[in-house]
Image 1 (cartoon, rainbow, N blue to C red):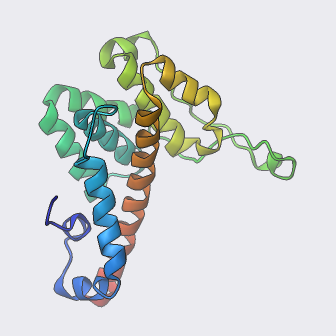
Image 2 (tube, rainbow, N blue to C red):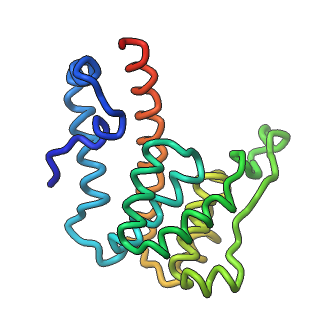
Amino acid sequence: MTTVDIVDELVGATDELRALRERRPVTIEQLQASFDALFSPVSSAHFSLTERDYIAAFATRLTSDDAVAEFYAERALARDAQRGSDILAYAAEHTTGGPFGQYREAGLVDESTDGHRLVPNDVDIAQFGERLAAALAHTHLLVVRPREADDAAIAALLAAGWSPDGIVTLSQLVSFLAFQQRVISGLRAVQEEIA
């Protein structure tokens, strides 16, 4: 277990912000526990640590070029400089607005929007392998077209060799990263106000 508070590290927290955060110790503990569970798990049998770092770099770069994205980019590059660079370039290639997707509910159909959908081609699969390419596509789906995450998306992961446990952890990771980026963005804004 790490003793570093990853949120403080990524925010570059001042003493004032740390004092403010310490008013909510359970929140601090839970955020850190989530990070530790995802990046220092008891078992990585279904979703390797390397894959986690690659997915984290991809997911965070899709949405922002911030301290969080930089942190995960560095982790991916440390795993394998070439593969990490390829994943970051792939994220840049598929960064888009959003969220997009089709609502199925009758009252919301008019709010449906269409936009970019990442579907790995043969070159992508040759470059990343079927398993990682499927995970990158699923990550893009969860980030950019979340309302379209359905049974077909899960079936695509299963067909690429992902286990149900791995799929659950992949989805948890992407969800955590989105939350972490929002928290850190908010804390940076607070820190600017109290500085």
